[in-house]
Length: 67
Image (cartoon, rainbow, N blue to C red; front, top):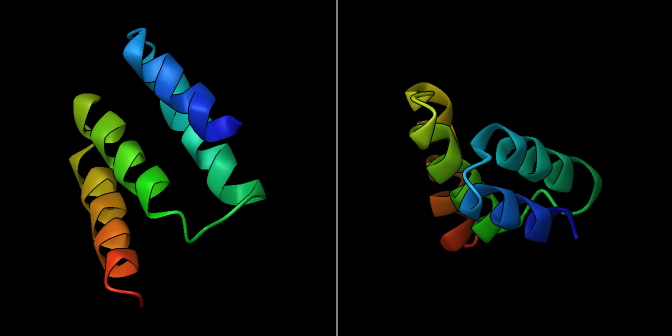
Protein backbone atom coordinates (compact mmCIF):
# COMPACT_ATOMS: atom_id res chain seq x y z
CA UNK A 1 0.00 0.00 0.00
CA UNK A 2 2.72 2.48 0.95
CA UNK A 3 4.62 1.95 -2.28
CA UNK A 4 1.46 2.63 -4.30
CA UNK A 5 0.94 5.80 -2.28
CA UNK A 6 4.53 6.79 -3.01
CA UNK A 7 4.04 6.38 -6.73
CA UNK A 8 0.74 8.27 -6.65
CA UNK A 9 2.35 11.11 -4.71
CA UNK A 10 5.25 11.30 -7.15
CA UNK A 11 2.93 11.33 -10.16
CA UNK A 12 1.01 14.23 -8.57
CA UNK A 13 4.20 16.21 -8.09
CA UNK A 14 4.32 15.61 -4.35
CA UNK A 15 7.89 14.36 -4.38
CA UNK A 16 8.68 14.86 -0.67
CA UNK A 17 5.58 12.87 0.21
CA UNK A 18 6.61 10.16 -2.23
CA UNK A 19 9.99 9.78 -0.51
CA UNK A 20 8.23 9.51 2.86
CA UNK A 21 5.92 6.80 1.54
CA UNK A 22 8.80 4.83 0.03
CA UNK A 23 10.77 5.06 3.27
CA UNK A 24 7.77 3.89 5.23
CA UNK A 25 7.22 0.99 2.86
CA UNK A 26 10.82 -0.13 3.24
CA UNK A 27 10.66 0.15 7.03
CA UNK A 28 7.46 -1.76 7.66
CA UNK A 29 7.15 -4.12 4.74
CA UNK A 30 10.09 -5.34 2.72
CA UNK A 31 13.62 -3.92 2.61
CA UNK A 32 14.39 -6.18 -0.35
CA UNK A 33 11.88 -4.50 -2.67
CA UNK A 34 14.03 -3.52 -5.64
CA UNK A 35 11.34 -1.42 -7.30
CA UNK A 36 10.74 0.59 -4.14
CA UNK A 37 14.46 1.40 -3.78
CA UNK A 38 14.60 2.42 -7.44
CA UNK A 39 11.49 4.60 -7.24
CA UNK A 40 12.80 6.26 -4.10
CA UNK A 41 16.04 6.99 -5.95
CA UNK A 42 14.10 8.66 -8.74
CA UNK A 43 12.18 10.83 -6.26
CA UNK A 44 15.32 11.74 -4.30
CA UNK A 45 17.12 12.64 -7.51
CA UNK A 46 14.22 14.90 -8.52
CA UNK A 47 14.63 16.69 -5.18
CA UNK A 48 18.35 17.20 -5.82
CA UNK A 49 19.32 14.80 -3.03
CA UNK A 50 21.94 13.15 -5.23
CA UNK A 51 23.93 11.19 -2.60
CA UNK A 52 20.77 9.64 -1.17
CA UNK A 53 19.52 8.87 -4.66
CA UNK A 54 22.78 7.13 -5.54
CA UNK A 55 22.49 5.01 -2.39
CA UNK A 56 18.94 3.99 -3.34
CA UNK A 57 19.93 3.16 -6.92
CA UNK A 58 22.92 1.13 -5.69
CA UNK A 59 20.70 -0.82 -3.32
CA UNK A 60 18.20 -1.52 -6.10
CA UNK A 61 21.00 -2.69 -8.37
CA UNK A 62 22.39 -5.04 -5.71
CA UNK A 63 18.95 -6.49 -5.12
CA UNK A 64 18.54 -6.99 -8.86
CA UNK A 65 21.62 -9.21 -8.81
CA UNK A 66 20.13 -11.24 -5.99
CA UNK A 67 22.51 -10.12 -3.24
